[in-house]
Length: 144
Image (cartoon, rainbow, N blue to C red; front, side, top):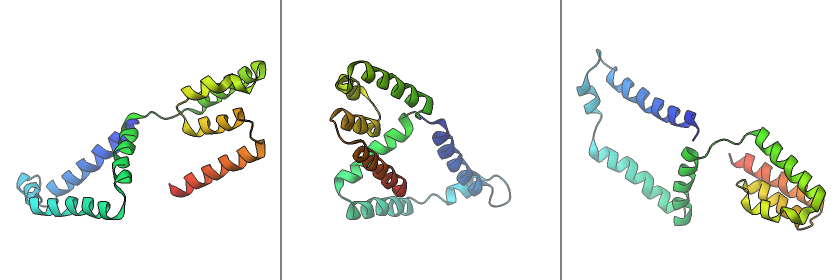
């Protein structure tokens, strides 16, 4: 898990809470409780969930939970690790050919890298692979 994601979420909640507590004449828990209104919470969060269900298919809504799990569980990928993996795979392919990479491809965690290497093993043209991968990167960066 990226610790900064957790720190950011907790810090945001704390800032909201302290903003409510210190809005008047000092620290007063009654001010904080004045912001608690169960019907308002129900309308806000229930309405957001219902609006999401109206606008997106159930498969995408359920997919959000997978994304949230990834955000809090996956560690970042280091460029050094990817470079080392590519060097190792290229040395292996140089000695025994591209077909020997089949088992390594199945073990890869990185979907982008796995798709690219699978196309290499399948014998696709280098320009075709480059164009496809660049298009995928451009599409991904446009979405985020």
